[in-house]
Amino acid sequence: MNVVASTVSLHVDDVAASSRFFTTHLGFREIEVVDDFTWLGRDDSAPDILLQPRDLELPSQPPCGHGSAHVIVSFTVTGIAGEHERLRREGANITLSLRQERWGEWLLRLTDPNGVVVQLVEWVPPAGA
Image 1 (cartoon, rainbow, N blue to C red):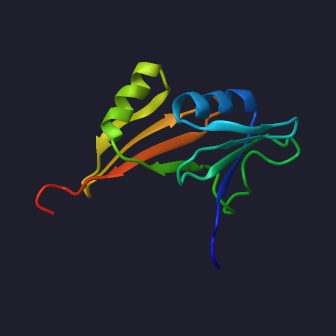
Image 2 (tube, rainbow, N blue to C red):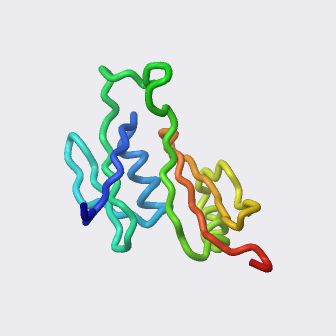
Image 3 (cartoon, rainbow, N blue to C red):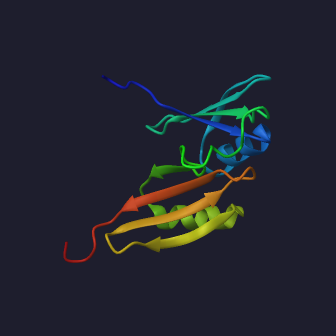
């Protein structure tokens, strides 16, 4: 198998609000906007984001023991400290402030108006590693 592109499909209550979040704070641009979806993209290696209205006929939670009810969209970035400051200045909803894990990864989390959690990470080897 050779994966040549990737897309994350997110089903949300307010497509326009999520689109504003991704375009304002995360550098995505709207590629196509139609009644059934909004397609977002970037010029780097980030996957495309497909925003669709939540299907009210589907359960919002999977049956107990089947699948995962929580999804985190994670992007590995460079310059995470500067991104944290920029996002803070822009008033982005930072739900986990910048911190370093003991294994060396720096991370922060944002949450969009629909509850989509976006995690930004940067690998910085711990001192002496």
